[in-house]
Image 1 (cartoon, rainbow, N blue to C red):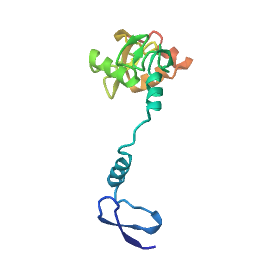
Image 2: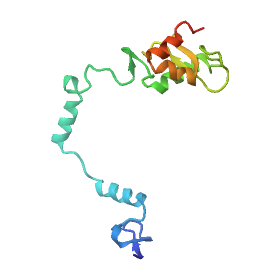
Image 3: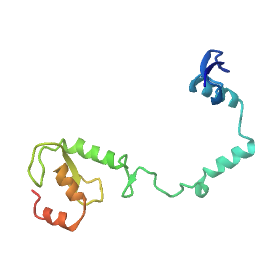
Image 4: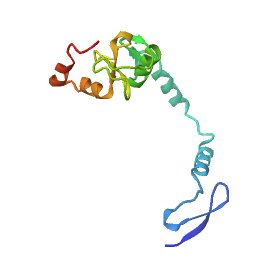
Length: 152
């Protein structure tokens, strides 16, 4: 099958494509610009505006009485995700240098959450090497027995 030259409906530039693709725009940029121009002047009706504003008020609001996603343990915090929480620990405790279990200083050392509750408590984290961290987080009895009494 051969490519043919097609004229873009937006910028009037020519581009090559297969006829079967039914393309009328040379790029996504032209396509998006044409779509936004087509929507210009489209407005919500007054009835729709009233409905939308009522839904934002009080008990009709689906989020009424609920904590936003960035709350942890009922407290406002910007630390809502696992990654952000570990970043916060790294910022406050620094980069871990030595594994609390095996004592290695080689390879990657990570901050491990001790209680598995991921609280915003700086003392709830300990440095572990990747191997010890995997064993600690695997939460099986055999791995946990190896860690009991092994912390510094």
